[in-house]
Amino acid sequence: MPKTEVLIVGGGVTGAGIARDLALRGTSVMLLEKEDFSTGATGRSHGMLHSGGRYAVKDPESAMDCAREGVILKRIASYCIEDTGGLFIGIEDDDPTYVDRFLRGCAETGVQAKEITTKEALSLEPRLSSRVSSSVEVLDASIDPFALTLGNVEDARDCGAEILNYRVVQRFLVQEGRIQEVIFENLRNGSRESVRPEVVVNASGAWVDNVASLAGLRIPMSIDKGTLVVFNGRLVNRLINRLRMPSDGDIIVPSHSASIVGTTSDRVDSVEDFVVDRSDVDLLISEGQSMVPDLRHARAIRAYAGVRPLLGGRKEGRDISRTYRVIDHEEEGIDNLVSIVGGKLTTYRLMAEKTSDLIMCKLGSAGHCITASEPISNPMAAKTVRDLLAFPLIRMNRKYGDEQTDIIAGCTSSLRGKEILCTCEEVLRGEAEYFCSREDVMRLSDVMRRTRIGMGYCQAGLCIFDMASVMMEHSNQEPLDLIGHYLRERWKGVEPVLFGSQLRQEVFKRYLYDGVYHLESLLGGEAR
Ligand SMILES: Cc1cc2nc3c(=O)[nH]c(=O)nc-3n(C[C@H](O)[C@H](O)[C@H](O)COP(=O)(O)OP(=O)(O)OC[C@H]3O[C@@H](n4cnc5c(N)ncnc54)[C@H](O)[C@@H]3O)c2cc1C
Image (cartoon, rainbow, N blue to C red; front, side):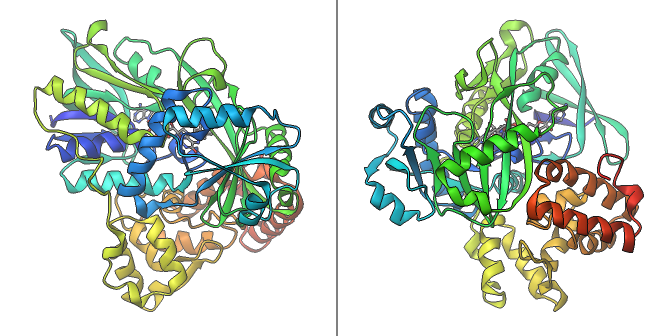
């Protein structure tokens, strides 16, 4: 049976960050993720690198962590960050005293903030409402959560870590107060496998309680759903936050070719089984419009929801701190299990550092953390950069870390490699080919998370066939199964925004899929 020093459960940004941290310290690591990387809360976030401003009044510890980590991430992960800057804006009816509390909170927590006049704010962001009454500039930025996670995964692999997706951890064999064996299912071939770890890390986000229960333990969690709506095009250049206590619909994030409006906060019972409610979509659009009225004319292209892994109690979602806790389960009788709970995407590196410190103690090893200074990637190292069109290249800089060199080489080595497969997101055939040939990639949505193919306003309306044909060169799966799975998943996000242009486009796509390609049987009852 294979052995490893550390076995990590969960391939969101936290698990990937811990794998990288430990691998850089010379520890042997295996990570198991039940789906693709970033399919949990990580890939369902806004992609906001918090300056700390959002928490400066209500949650000072989170604010301080975000302020410090924001600076570090801009240094070590610049390839996947767009340093847009941010504005907190108050609207005429908002509490006029909040701006002073906000500025005081920022000063006390080390969050850089500068009040500016409404005239200055409108000159920076002309689409803001004319009802803006107060404005504060902060250091918020936009971060690509998929690229960040994959950068950590690839770096960890480069240091010898074994990082595997589509592996579901199902059982812990506990004897004499230790997890002796971890049993998991390999979803690629249905086989049951096991590994003998010295330490197990539970980095499974909102699933932490489920995973802890495999060792007979409980971690009380609050499962809090947040919904977001994606609009086509960039309506603002900076991240816009409402200058009030965190509430529904008060964030707009410019992200690649889109604008993301979020979010809501609702307690839910299940980590897996939750849907996007149309009432949440309507609320987000109306709240978003009070900051940027042009949202009224913008095209909502999809909606999605994620669940926040918040540490327990009876409090409501927004009242629970966004700080994190590293739990050593030794006191509860399991010597070699550590759980990491709560936190933010912005603070993942710090969470990974603190978790890894404890693990190193348990292993009785030396080795200190270097992730605060060691860059995740060096995207500008590409030699073949000049061979590519400028626009896709700028995008590649932000999507891929060290892998960029290989991907560009694939795009430029043949004429077909430079062909544009997805016109909305400017994704080249060479990019899709590179990832379709990788072992991690099993489904069309895995190619999408890595390249952004199909994420644009047409939601893979046409490029799905090209995507499937590239995939078929590397897979022996049934093409109709691949396409059917992808279309049903996309439908979940498109259905809640079926109005205006997006509705007209879906009707057109249905004629095309049913009338030309006879794909009606693939779409499933609800999608018809
Ligand atoms: C709506 C929303 C918006 C957000 N916006 C932001 C933001 O803008 N900025 C920010 O800083 N933070 C944001 N957050 C918070 C942030 O997304 C999370 O704190 C962070 O992504 C959590 O990462 P994680 O790796 O701990 O959890 P996840 O990303 O959920 O990863 C856990 C992984 O464990 C896997 N897993 C579970 N059980 C098993 C098993 N048995 N075997 C194998 N694998 C398993 C899951 O499949 C999952 O991939 C947001 C959260 C939500 C919900």
